[in-house]
Length: 88
Image (cartoon, rainbow, N blue to C red):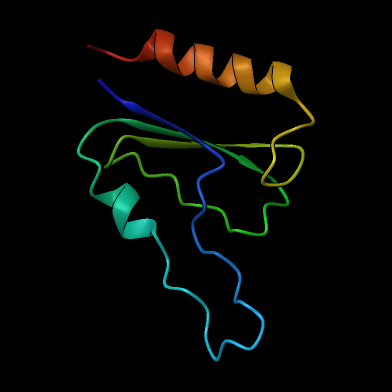
């Protein structure tokens, strides 16, 4: 069992007129309790989660933004390799 996150919105940007940014969603990833793969665009305006060997979380950066529209082959390769290595 594991979780694949494609473009996880770590921290939404502040809304127009807002006094502060939304809180980070890193604790949601930290508390998953299962291995997690996050595939994130290198210029994603929603932020980049942290990898963690202790929590079995892998973060793969690919070209692009939050839409992940640029490098589908790299995304498929990252997900395929991670799933193949996942110990059930």
